[in-house]
Image (cartoon, rainbow, N blue to C red):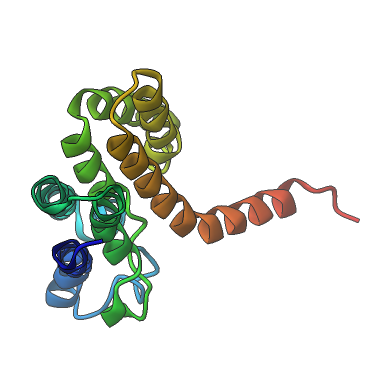
Length: 197
C-alpha cells in the first residue's frame, strides 16, 4: 500500500470518529449517550434527543462515509488501499479512540460509503432494509437485510473486484460491532421464552 492510502485511511478513521449524537447529547443534556443508556448514532439520537436531532445526526454520519469513499476513489491505487479507506470511517464510528472504543453501530457511515461505491445497489438493498425496518419497528433490520443483499447484488452483477471487496469489508465492520449486542439480545430472548423450572 502507498503512503497516501494509509494517510487517507487515518483521515477516514478520524472523520468517522466524529459523532454528532455524542456532541449534541453533551451540549443539550450535559451527559454522554452512553450515560443515557444508548448508542451515539441516528437511532439513539431519535430516542434521546428527538426527531430533528436524529435527522442531523444521520445525515452527518452518512455524509462522512460518502466523503471518505469519494476520497478512496481518488487516492487509492491498490485493492487493499481502497478497501481500507472505505472501511475506515465505519471503524472510526464504531470504535472511536476518544470514547474508549465505544461508539455507534456503523450503519449510517456504511450506507454513505456504499452509496458512493455503487449507488443503484445501495438504494435498492438499503431501501428494502428500511421498508422492512418500518414494518418490524426494529432499526437494525436495515443493516441485517440491506448490507448482505448489497454485497450479493454486487457479486451477482459482476461489479469490479475492488468494489465487491470494499462492500464486504464495510459489511463485516458493521457486523463485528453488532455481534455483542445481538448476542445479548438472543440471550435475553432465550431467558424470556425458556420454561421456568
